Length: 66
Image 1 (cartoon, one colour):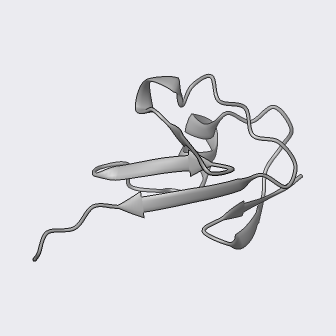
Image 2 (cartoon, rainbow, N blue to C red; image 1 turned 60 degrees about the horizontal axis):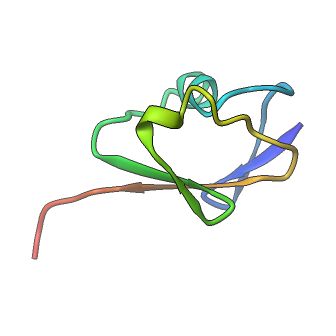
């Protein structure tokens, strides 16, 4: 199935969890926040959040500065 990560298409198998997808994509999980279809997914729920075909994943990385 196809999902969109920061507006870029990516393929993954059905019933893939958010944690599995992040690992498959080799995403550094330090200092990031993730939303699926405009809803924030807390880190403690990444293992139970199942991706669906066409879902939109937004990853935001915190940076320092002012």
